[in-house]
Length: 202
Image (cartoon, rainbow, N blue to C red):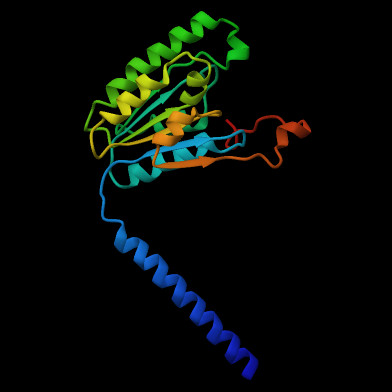
């Protein structure tokens, strides 16, 4: 019994210290503005995390803009679902992955068309959350210029949040962003020969 009491007291002391640290951080977070998030890395979940934020934003009654770069040759569950909401402006601008199209000039034209829509969203204060899905790939391949994207991010409405997804996010974008998450692959069913599954990858 005595050992349990001592262990309980140590636990209480640790959690109290942790609470004090968290409370201090919360008290110190006084700035209120839109944030830029980058989801990058070779692991699964970059777009999935972004669309989870779309659902969260809708729960708060926010208006959302989505532009999908690169992807577009097949319908996805998130597109089918979020198109049901009038609060979501959803554009699929890619023509499929680059290894499918095999046409660089067409891919560049698609990326530029997508950026024209995205840049309009980044000028619209009525859109609280903008998701630029797979834009990092377009930047990596130089279909878009990183500086033009950064300039639009710098000049967007002050309370607008932006999520940029895709592998190989450029260093300048990572440096500018407020929150950066790198998805790291450990295992993937596809590598074991399992097809992409509805509700999981599609």
